Image (cartoon, rainbow, N blue to C red):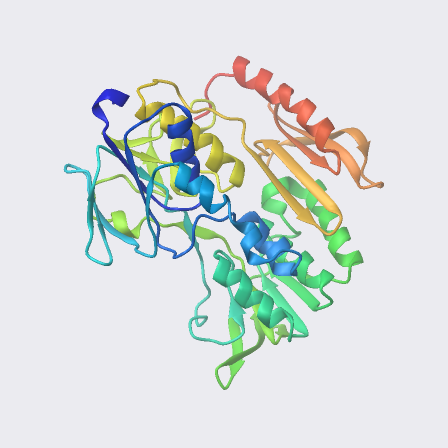
Length: 396
């Protein structure tokens, strides 16, 4: 579809990926109508600060807004907020909403993100939180200010960030989860072992390598967590960070392929005139196969690719993935793909000094680079991944 036959673009999702799509379209000269449909009442805001600066109180919630009102107005887009999409008619390119609206467009961009997984028995139990939205962050912060014992269920990126933030606020924090160390699935045994040491040194108790069998409660409020081992962890507050599922239930009858996200081709196209972007998109990466990335950088980069596709540019989207995390005084930057079976070598700096760069190799090829408090050096070594991608044949 070229720009000449696309008079109206509808973006379903008003977070970073959706807003970035609008900005990319305007930056690339698109003059047509744009409508942005959002399920939350807020203007677009950023999610990474929710588990760090907003949760800690270092930022007022307003600072998480992605753009000032004047900039949003300059985009000449209609923002329809607080009205979730409920269905998509692909043939007629029409989205129906909870309030009864029917929004039709020539191109539809799905940017509905993900929603947090929850534990059985969690709904309606006071003192149990997930963290995805601004309201989630503010509600968890309010409880952190009066609680003393927090259990974080989940040892991934979000769980580790919540743990670090709460520990720095002075709470007694225990982290639990099935993996052997914080972020073991994301960074492998070497670096996750260093993260485990960091958290332990800061007073965090680790109860890892085991799942949670149930939440304990009294009078409608959580009192602790029972692990699969039988151990009970007392808590007056529990944060659940056990991953997220793509927000695709509204697409169930659309005919669009849904498998761990909206499945797209290498141009981020899910159907004729329908695209997906951000956390919800699972697309064909020409080197890594079908992948879905839940990170802020991808939301922006993929938005530019979707804008190009809508405007008639026929180019595959094949980025070098990138994410970062801040925990205590550690800043980790990850470029590329860190495969579980990868050989890991520290190529700069020193682990003992907590300042190093590690390269991850699979089959002798550099697929990933991790920097711990060495962002510049990690970024320089990113080129090794780019070079390897150029030479490599596609991975199935």
